[in-house]
Image 1 (cartoon, helix red, strand yellow):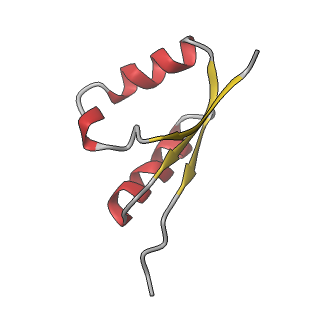
Image 2 (cartoon, helix red, strand yellow; image 1 turned 90 degrees about the vertical axis):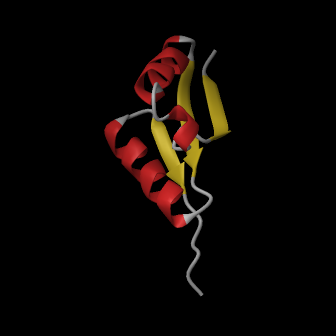
Image 3 (cartoon, helix red, strand yellow; image 1 turned 180 degrees about the vertical axis):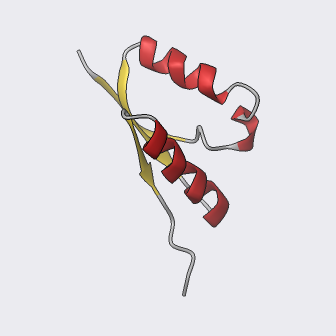
Length: 66
């Protein structure tokens, strides 16, 4: 069975120390796709970068411009 995490925040600063290890562990645990959600411009940029560097991560970003 394929597991898809539809909403996560691995771009959050609380993951700064062990982000890569956590991402590796979730993949090894069977999560083959995950959407990293940005809730502000900084976190949205991090979400996009994570999606660029991990082929099973996708990003969803918030447009804060008016």
